[in-house]
Length: 263
Image (cartoon, rainbow, N blue to C red; front, top):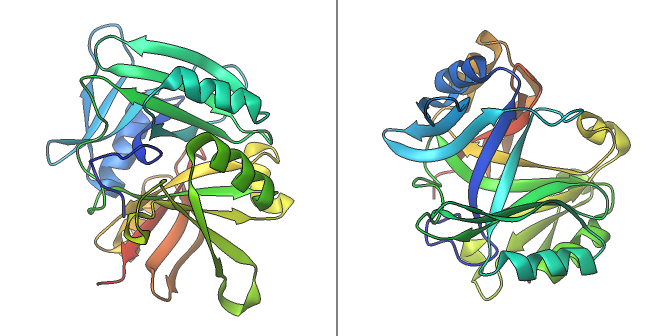
């Protein structure tokens, strides 16, 4: 469960870099019922809102050679200390800690194998307003070529606690992630070791993607297909989890849709 008290190490914000901001806004509006609130004159992008509540950000993709993708931010109390931990663990600083006016302090990194993620040290803004509800973030997930290395790195950086769960049919192990000092009910994500074919979107590097809750996975998938996106897997029923589908938006940014199992 992701909550908006944003304990250290828990996801608190996400944003999408897209080559065509209006087209991305239209796509996610159709799939998730989001409205885009523009940032202001001269800035291409803005904040996505669901029923008036902030759920994500959207900006123009400007980094040369970068693929359109979602960036997930995790809460930290000290972005500079986190940066030192990232470097000590063999990660790379992509964007050094910087203040975003009075709202907070952010930094972006790559893990030792190239998986990109970010952190947010809250100021006036703690993060998004809506989570764990239809049309909002409900889980985060890392696909990686080396689960043991990912556990070591992210455990050292965030203090996460890991719990292994066997995949159905003996298809490997799924590792659940819980913030330090939090009970199992506060699990916020997972990591999965996958083969090279599953990492082709990121050129063979690991990558994080968001899982969005929806009231009706099949209906949301129909909107994905009807608005220029594609479906890589599903919809399928996952026992004890819900009905889910792995999707790509029109620019091949990946995300998962999930209608959680009741209770």
